[in-house]
Length: 108
Image (cartoon, rainbow, N blue to C red; front, side):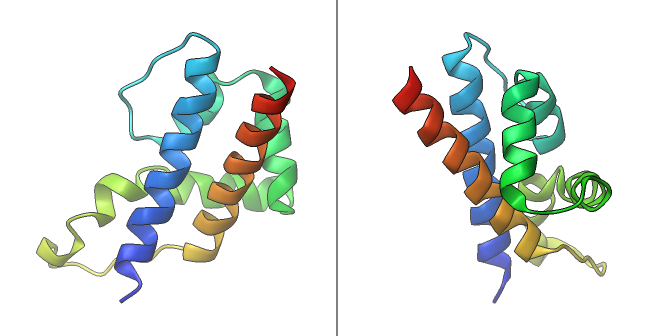
């Protein structure tokens, strides 16, 4: 039953990224985690990357693979194909986004 964990982690990261963007006056309707991250200022992007503790290549590869996790996994029970995702990465990414959001809130 890891499916709900994937969906919740992806949605958590998405909401966190949209919160950070909203503080910058930027709105987005996208569910694409990579696209949302790239809209952030470079220092916030780097802080999120750094908070995951991953090497840049691994971070980029995992984010690319997970970028549409919320869209692809919320109705996984309707799919008739095998899918894989690194739920550990999604958890780290969501936690990193949360840490940066909390830090930026206290600075603002």
